[in-house]
Image (cartoon, rainbow, N blue to C red; front, side):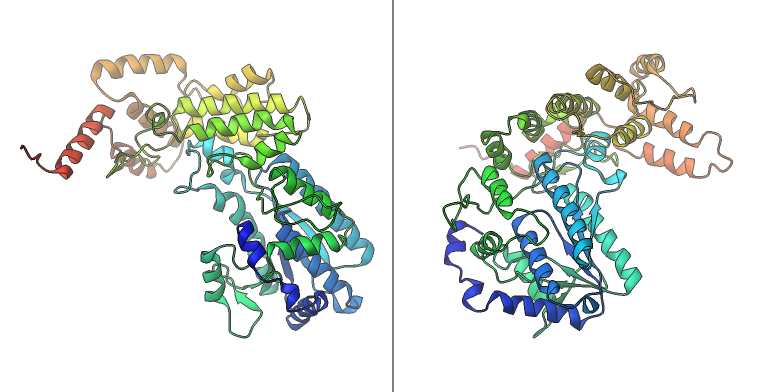
Length: 477
């Protein structure tokens, strides 16, 4: 919602009091036997929803607040470190104060599985930097971890109520989804994708100003400081905000925090503003993000991308050849730059880890088994940049190495055969080597042979021919 829309929108407090809102929350809590799951991102909306629920339930006698309230927060593993520190501190406070005051809240920090992490897919598999048309990261990093937790509670309890800090007016598409699953006259809506999950939105009709008015006038019940949250928004929004409650209130706007690696937007203005506000140690993060965003430039794609997808197929659109995953060279460059960035930020905070050891080991495995990395580049790059070794698994299967690659390249060139084709066939044999039942090897070999093994020049010739045919014959005056 824009600042202008926020100021025009009527306040929820013109229609009802805060006690009315608390009463509604208690009514929903007491009307259904299911546990609650509150999605907490550390932002103003989810903080408001959580704080409202806390104050509402605190007025119930202990024997009436026995249903568990799970507060879940998803760490994408590429969250802006400042925000993740704030979330970690808040979750700890919630856990401690809930125990002290006998409130039914339990915190749970979630994360993507190793196979879904940002670096395993971007560097390991070569997925290109996300953009508006190919946002492959959101489901893997944010949605899947939450859904797994919610479904585990559905399996345990039959149904759950998911409490979300969602407000109407932020997105027309979101409003349509809310209306589609809402039962007339009911406060709950069916979750559009998760069977057994109901959705409750206590701040559905709040404006942005309502959110900040509530947070800055009602203290955090778990001992947090809502003004520090406002300061985070101020630093991430360069101080441009729609309202000020009093002289001591830092202005705070509609900023959105997210992953420091995000390339869906052209510029990360939030991180730029944080740096301008004094967080200069984040400069290496911004420089890496900007380099990653630069790989989306159409002018550099032919040098940094493969012309075939991971399935070995070529795609030609009306605009020409569609460049696919990162080349092996670009993936190695991304790893080198990331490790250099990690070394730089660890000078500020040695505990900061941008890529985990498990991720590095999984990336190495993918390079060795799926991307024909016969030279085993990852341990070399890691050692060159960090000067450290993390106990790599020793390759004791006598699989091909650099000498075999050089010999194969020479033979393939002489025989006019794509060297990667032969590499893939050899890797397929190693994959099934020693197995008693090798029936699947024939399907794998067939899949490799059915890939598009034309040269780039041959494919570009087809692109040119298609474009000429689409344009039709030229009219000569």
